[in-house]
Amino acid sequence: MSTFVLVHGAWHEGSAWNKVIKQLEAKGHQAFAPTIAGHGKGVNKNVNHAQCTQSIVDYIVSKDLTDIVLLGHSFGGTIIAKVAEAVSDRIKRLIFFNAFVLNDGDRLTDNIPPDSQALFDKLARESDDNTMMLPSEVWREAFINDADLDLARSSYAQLSPEPYQPFLDKLDLKQFYSLPIAKSYLYCTEDNVLPQGEQWGWHPRMSNRLGLFRLVQMLGSHEVMFSNPIGLAEKIIVAGRE
Image (cartoon, rainbow, N blue to C red; front, side, top):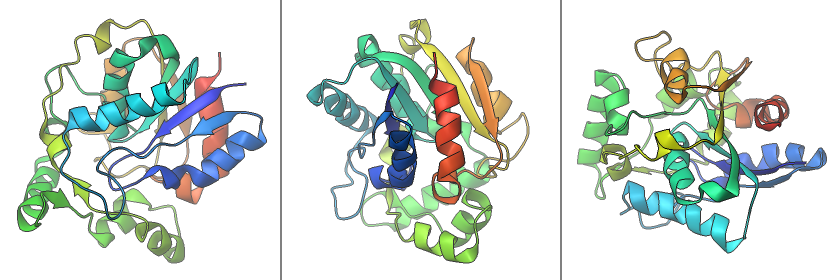
């Protein structure tokens, strides 16, 4: 059986994984879902990407987790790449789940369409603390397009403003791209957060940057941890198996 560490994406916190963890544990696996520094409600949002990464490294080390399958969702893909550099000896596989895979020297904002970048710039500029809150209509149509209105609303209520600085930090990923750790890309085919297609989409644009990787696909939106936690848990097991 596997030990999974599930790293959430932007606007989320670790509790987003609760239903998925329940499914993984029911099948005999261990699963953990830390909250990235600066994320969640009522916390200090003044963090950079390095601090976000360090919070996950500290979590893994403090619990002395080894032989783990480390999964990153969306923004969390940028986190697990840097975590892998720090604790590669504790990781047996990385899973990028509809996640950003940045080129060396990139910022996350280099990898989103200009209209999205302009929206994020505006939201952060208009905030009091350099954060951006995802508009509810974007959540409904692009993020969780496979859910009914009640689930869209209840899941949106769990979100909180996202620190913008980690999106702006350039990441040195030379070490990441030299690591021999096995990698998987888990792709939900109805994910509309990035425009579908090769110019901006998740797969194959992001996935192919991994070099040799295992591709696992499933139906669903960007937020299947809410809309289909049973199906997602099954695919995570496939993506993380030996």
